Structure formats: structure tokens, C-alpha cells
Image (cartoon, rainbow, N blue to C red; front, side):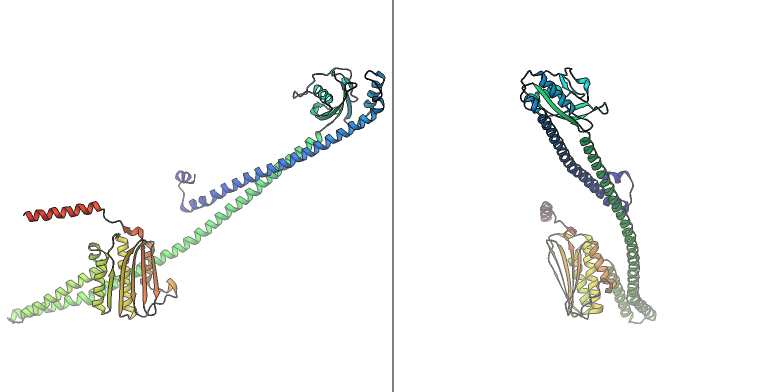
Length: 485
């Protein structure tokens, strides 16, 4: 999603980082919000169901108590009466009609045929047959009450007109049967208060969920603002550090260039320039001797030729220091051998080189970096260490290639870290960092050990065996052709 968004909109690096930090945060907050809401609703539904069950149980128990009271009130008339005792039936209906409770409560009586016998608060129902009566939702009323009475009694819920308002409301009824008379006696209560309590509880839950969403949204917004402000702070700080490092690096490049120019100028002035001046004087002297017919002309010419040869050698040495051709032509081992021999001849310091034949070849960047590090290390040894022995070793291994330069000089102070190091050591460190390698400088007391390791990714794979066989075969054919010739 982020990749698709960034492809549609041209975003800066900082904006991409901000999106990368905020989008997962917002997704996580959204998921947490949904989970919290779901869990809260589930818990609330359980609580509401339990509350509703408790309220219904209380109403049912209340109805049973009312009906038990009614049964007790008519016992004196019902028990001694026979199945067709009209007088007793009249007295029972009068007793039940007089027994009302609350604003809506009363007792009703239906015979098993469906005719209403008692309905004190809705007298229009009396003496009429209501068998087959259903409420607005299709729930049977009278038939179900009669069935419950025949089976000993039970509870039934249905919609019924409320006397006080004339509108339908949920009624909960409890009915028992007088089997001798085949009557269904019951009472009921409207459960508006129960439904109102449940609705109020659900509304409170929804309100709590909304508040929870608002709280989580506020927390998420605060977190996004903190990420944004932190990103701005880090960006400004990193930009300042990058600018400072860039200025430092630029100055270091200028210093390195200036030092290299000074070195090359000194080499040209102290070496080639002096040799060429001497060669010119020798040639002038030979010219004058030639004009005078002096026999020492040959001696002067030979001296000038020798001086020109020295100048050529000096030019080659400076060129080799700038970029040795042997490094490109013969590889790192040969280039280090040449540098070690030249260093030994120039300084008189015993220098040894140990190399292991590589199965693989180093790429150009790694070869150049290790060669320059060796040059810089030998220069530091010559200038500062006072060493009498130097040992260089280069070897390949499973994780890359390592070059070690060790001397027996005074050592180097590494307690100040990078800030205490000279520009040469910093250049060595930066060369290895560019290759993702490591440079370790160890004080041996006496002496110093420099360990430069490049990773395996800078080692080229070996030549394919097929190519080698083809090359061998080609050489054999060439040799055969020569023999034939």
C-alpha cells in the first residue's frame, strides 16, 4: 500500500519515513480500537443479558406470587363446589374482578373454549370468545394460555393493549388451570420498565464505546504528532550533522589534495628538476668541450645520459606512486611486492611480504583500497615509528580477504579515538567503511598492527573450469602449430 502510494505521489525521503512510521501506527490503533469495541460490546451484551434475565425472573416470580394469592382467595369457594356450581363460579369471578393491583395489574379468566369470563380493566372483553386471537406480530394469545393451563400452568409473553395508554406493549403473563371448571386463570404485567432498563443499558454501552473511540483517537493523534515532531527534530539534527560532516569531508579532501600537490611539487623540484638541471650543465659542458676539441666530450655526454636516465626513473617512480600500473596488470600481490622492495631500498628498514595465492580475485575497489592502506601504513612507519622491521601479509578466507601490516616501532596512541588520529589514518578508515569492511589498529607495545578486512562481496568468483580447459586446449593447439612450423 505504501509503495503504491509513493509511486502515485512524488514524496521526499523524510515524507516517506513519516508515512512508514505513521501508517503502521494508525493501522495498529485502528485494529486495537475495533478489538476494544468488539470486546466491550461482547462484555456489555453479557451483562445486559444477565440483567434482562434477572429482571424477567423477578417479574415471573412476582406473577407467581400474585396468582398464588388469587388461588388462596378463591379456595373457600372453589374446593367444595362441583363442576357445574354456577353460584360458586359467580362468586369466584366477583372475587377475581375485585382483585386489582398497581396501575395496570388485574386477573383474567378464560374457559377452555376461549370465552373471557373476567377482565376488570377491559370489560369489553367479557363474555366474548377470543379463541384464535393473536397479537400484531402473529403470536397466539388465548390458545397458548389455554394450552398452558391444561398442562398445569406456565408463562407466556405477547403484545397486548395497555389499558392506561390504549397502545400495544409487551406483556408477560402467568396462567394456571382450574381443571374441575376447565378455567384458565392468569395475570400479567407489562414489562416496559424491563425493556426500558435494557435499552438504557445498551445506550450506555454505545456511549462508552464512542468515548473509548474518542480516547483512542486522541491518543493516536497525539502519537502521530509526537512522531511528526520527532521526525522533524531528527531530520533537522541529522541534516546539521550531515552538513558538518560534509564540510569536514570537503575540507579533508582539500587538505589531501593540497598535501598531494605539495608532495608532487617537492618530488618534481627536489628530484626531477635537480637531475634535469645537472643534465643541462653536463650537456653545456660537453658542447663547450666539443667546440674546443676536448677529448673529455664523451665523458660529459655519458654523464648527461645517465642523468636523463635518472630523471626518467624518477618520473616512473612518481607515476607509480600516483597509480602503479603493476596493480592493474599483475594484481595486488605484485603491487605490494614492488612497494615493499622500494620501501626497503629507500629506508633500509627490513621489510617482508607474505601472500597466499587467491582462488578468487579482488575487485578494483578492494585492490585499490588495500594497496593505498599499505602505502599509507608504510609512510607512517617511515615518518613516525622508528621501526627496524615491517611485515605485511595478505590472505583470503571464507568471509573475505585480510591484509595485516605489523612493525616493531614506537606504536601509535589510539586512546583519543578517531579525533586524535591524523588524516592518513582517517583516510584508511574511510576507505574500509566505503567497502563495508573493517579496519583495526592495535598497539602491540612495542609496535603497531593494522588489520584491514574486506567482505566476501568484493571477491570475484573464480574463472569457470570450461574456460580454463578451452584456454589450455588453445595453447596446446598453438604449440602444435609452432611445432609443425
